[in-house]
Amino acid sequence: MENRQLAKGDFERAVGRAFWRKVISWLSRRSNDLLPFDMVRDHMPIKGQHYLGLKQVEIKKIVGSTGRYMDFDRAFLPVQTHTRERWVNIDKAHYDQVELPPVELYKMGDIYFVKDGNHRVSVAREWGQEFIDAYVTEIKIPVPLTTDTRVDDVKNKQEQAWFLEKTGLSKNYPGQLFETGTPGQYDKLLEHISFHHWALGQKRKERISFEDAAVSWCNTIYLPLVEAIREQGILNDFPNLFETDLYLWITKYLWYFRLAYKDEGYFDQLPTKAAKEEAARHLAEEEHQPLVRRLILLLQRADWIDQMALEQELASFYEHTQLLNSRPEAKLTTTIPGQYEKLTEHIAVHRWYLGEQRREAISFAEAAQSWYDNVYMPLVQLIREQGALEQFPERTETDLYLWVIEEQALLRVEYGEDVSLEEATKQLKEGRSSQG
Image (cartoon, rainbow, N blue to C red; front, side, top):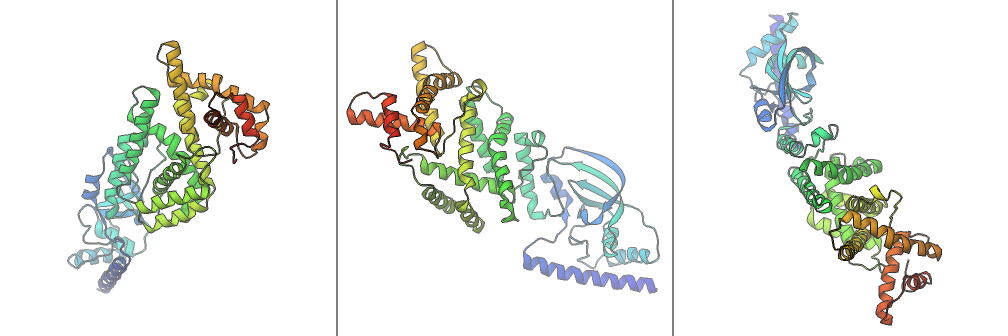
């Protein structure tokens, strides 16, 4: 009778603790419920199931149940009294040192759901056990479920699983989770990949599979920016966010940042500070979350964001032109955002003239090679011979190439006659029309 009284006292204390945990959960607005197995399973694409046998399982990783998820809270404390007798009997067995049979569990991701043995798990946890013997059946799913996963997170996990399945990224990048804590973000990622898919097809003039486009997007756009986020330690300032959340916001900021430069002339470049202010204004108008405003303040103080914009443009330029495949020595670097689009326009014009000259269709890659050999490098060689770069120590040969072309156009308008590249380069070197 003494052990039974002790067990009854344990149950009352457990119910009392469950009550206060419920109050704290309500105040913190963080779910304290067990995960319902059927709901989670129905939202997840199942990749297979197999029996693991008898295992020792960490009790803290058991956070769900197949049928008793309403009877216990997240810590497996009883939140009701109708199964008091069952709970007390199992607790008494612990006092009597009676060995209980293993429980039965389902494993999904890194967490477990009780198939049979909810009260045994509850009592074992109350006794402070760290492990429990269990017969385990694992259900394979493509996304991670952790002890932090709550009922409210399941819909987002479903979107994550669908995204990974559609893109094939779970297969090609098994260690990259593409996690986000905000519902609806995976639709935005798919929009990014869909646009990249279209652009890639336009550039290569061939059919590209969506999976190949997703790999290209990941290599050339997503991962470089994520690496920058890691190197800058930005997540330290946003501990409740994921890399993918920051990727989406910073990508939008970079888009507006580049857009601020787009229509500016080579000699009248919009100051970086003004471009950042313009990008910040657009992003703040579109995203109203307080965390976005914090991120904007960080980005406006950051120098690396300018370089990231340039690196993304350069990667896209090389992918479009395939220039490095045929001219690995080609180093077309510019210090001003938006200029690779101008280089692409130059190649497009050269492609048209080349097609007219040869009376045949010319691929963009072939036109890029011809432009590099017959237009770009001759002018760069002229810039070198005249030592023009010495007047602009913070600029590059590609900057000067673009400036000379515009200088030539300005001089033609002024004099009403053709002006040689040599004269345009000389004028630029002497400082005419330049503010570099």
